[in-house]
Length: 131
Image (cartoon, rainbow, N blue to C red; front, top):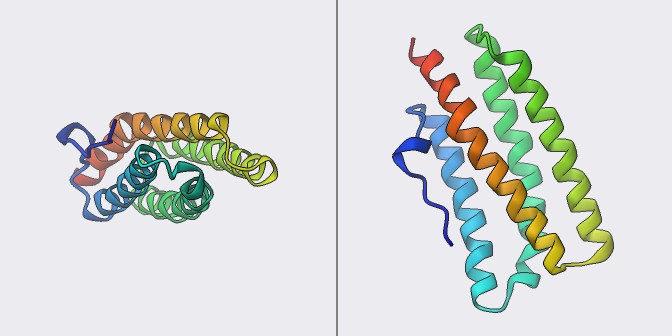
C-alpha cells in the first residue's frame, strides 16, 4: 500500500506541503524496498531520515504557529514533542536490535499517526494561516 498526498492532506501552504511530499516519498521508498525484498536494508536509513525530517518539519511548523499567533500551538507542540520522543525511542530500538518485522510495523504505525496528524491538525493550522 503506497501513501498518496491526496487533496484531504494538502494544506495549501507551500512549505508544509513540500515537506509532506518529502515524507510520503521516503515512506513509499521504504514500502517499495519491502516489496522487492530489500526492506531490511532500507529500514534504518528511513528511520534516520524520519528523525531528521520531523525535527526540521516540526520546527518549521512551530515557527509558523508562533509567528501567526496560532491558538492551537500548545497542543500541537505537545504532540510534536511526544512524537519526536517516540520516534527517537523506536529508532534507538531498531539500531540496537536490527531491522525486524516488528520494527517495520512500528515504523509504519508511526507513519500512519503522522499522516493522521497531517489530515487533522496541519489542516487546521493551514486554515489559520490563510486567515
